[in-house]
Image (cartoon, rainbow, N blue to C red; front, side):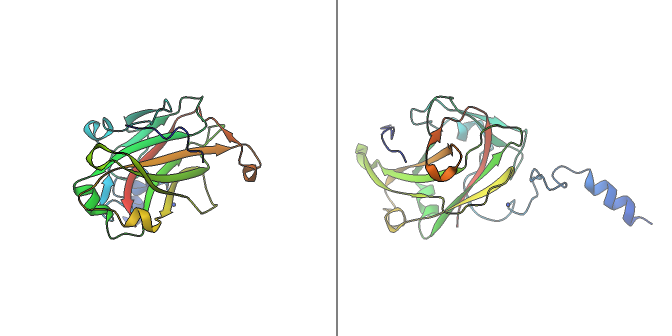
Length: 209
């Protein structure tokens, strides 16, 4: 896979209520497999199987991806991302081909859930989604887009991307790779000075909007 290293860039009743509070995820942590997104979108990547995660690539940034049950947004698993500690961007490259291209077509946006641990000194605060075309063994850059919101919290965040026309108007028979960049900037964030991430964070469930 050709890399992109040069591209920078949410009487019985009391007993029932108390019992309910003990269920996983009912404290608002977003770890309930029956949460609001559990039966919602059609997921491109569910991030709940070793087979799927084995196809994940770090695009030369040294990041590691491991299936985890520590926290999760949908289903019973998520992916723990361990950055290298030396790359300005932590990247995730995913194959987009076959049925996944069909899922992609006809949508104006894409989203990924990102969990920012409260105890981390550094968490990702800038996000980028890009695409390359690798149809027929060739490689060309399609287009990319930054997350354009500004509100983040500790715990789970739904990171939404608005797709440019170039990323929407792709061939149903094509073979593509999508790239997620996870970046943190030295305060103040507006100075656009990146810092290498080095502490683990979590991602879950990519779907179309």
